Image (tube, rainbow, N blue to C red):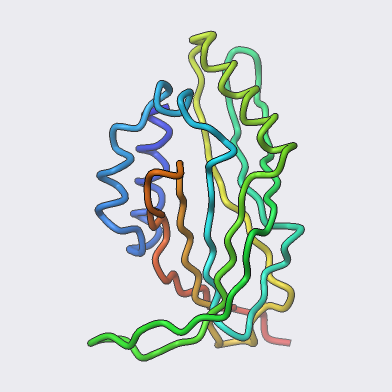
Length: 178
């Protein structure tokens, strides 16, 4: 598990500089035992999408893939919307004020069941590699040359605050010329 988290962090770091160093440090020691102790009913994820773009809620989910001697398996964690709020970011020294929509989700009952299956698998101590993903679809892609700004936050339990996984990543839509 530790290798998977480190590999994930390396991929994100090489791909973009939008992962806060504090996040990398927080999860650097995260391992199978930490994962086994999580209560899936307390996990929350928050996605912030710049206006005017809207998430396709049905296609927003967490997922985990495992690869072991038992084969490759994918576990899906469908999400339930808890809140959707229009917000304004604060202007900073290098950035201007921007409007966005903040979506807060919890893992659905089906996702909680899948989460428990993974936790049971961890107890078997089988050598396994893990790959986590957050997928989110939007209703309409940005016009060519326009950007969508995305932030992703994760809360592992009620006693901690959200941790920023991706901070204001600029997704520019590059359509083929027609």
